[in-house]
Image 1 (cartoon, rainbow, N blue to C red):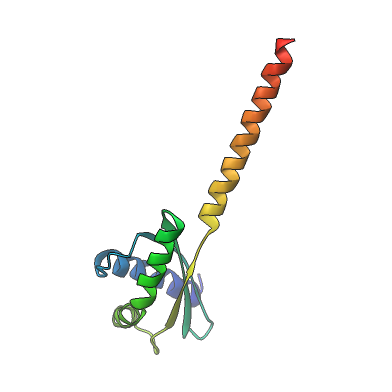
Image 2 (cartoon, rainbow, N blue to C red):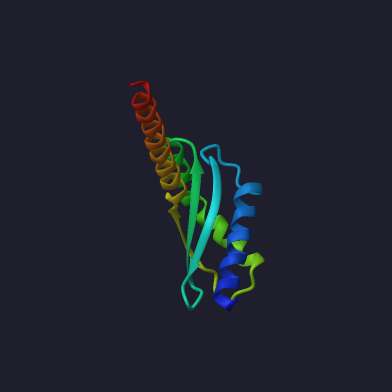
Length: 123
């Protein structure tokens, strides 16, 4: 595991803990930090998150995260000893929702196939 990968994993753990235990913003929904991408010089980090709920919940959560960036960045800098405090940006990870949608479509197709087979056996 490279240093960059170790830093990414440590940032993911710490930001998850900060969001869960230290931010008391009512706009913050059920958030999961799904991944972190850090630049090679470790100065910039994209934090990927997913939100359980509707689109409105995701929008409020994004607003809450963006308003807490300064606090999160300062707290992260205290906990992770790096030469520079990372500039962070939050990006919504929609891959989980995309996966759920694909699963729904597959289930619909299976139901349609089962119905066609039942109709074919009736004659």
